[in-house]
Length: 101
Image (cartoon, rainbow, N blue to C red; front, side, top):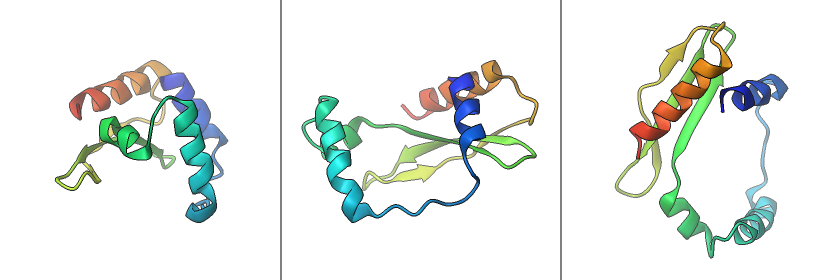
């Protein structure tokens, strides 16, 4: 998980990508159906969310809890040094997922 996270972060441009939700909806729903989910509601009900950010100074691993309405709300981030190993980042991501279950 840590190595995949580092590789993904290294490929990002650092710019925000605008997504047209109207055109993205159908491919998203088709992908969920191919993955075995009957609807996006079923997928979202069991979903967990952890974000990983890198700003050049440190990594932040941010768990998100669901509120009463089912929306994800960020919790306190775990900060890691910029020289953190893939193993350390992977362990932090897993710990964040375990904290929100």
